[in-house]
Image 1 (tube, rainbow, N blue to C red):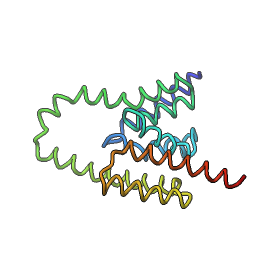
Image 2: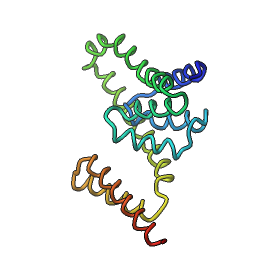
Image 3: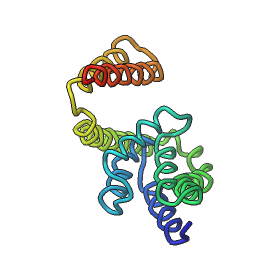
Length: 183
């Protein structure tokens, strides 16, 4: 474990947690930019894998992703540093502002400001989805699974975990069949 790496992980994820509104998915574009472009701690493909794993494990996707990246960079100490950095700002801000939030939650201006932030968050998430989609859709199989997954989720209201598990099974089956055909 390098103390410098742990401090850098903590500071980086603290910044992400401090300057991102809208929950886990809203943090993904900033995580992607910080991790792949600024520090090079992971490739875009690796970050995409961390998102996928983070989505299928219990907890908030951004915190799970931070934990995986921290672990890759500096082991258990890195995972703890990244996780604490990611949740730190929320804990501090919520604790400090909880009484103000309760007092002003019905204020018209506060409500409108939060709605404006929500719109910006949707745009940030959309950009992240497009970037991830360019990497994720790399074959005919991934396009087919993506379309089926989209339909199952939004049209037929299937639970996410069933779609993820089904996609894993179908992908493994496809790989198995493709390897047998090559032999």
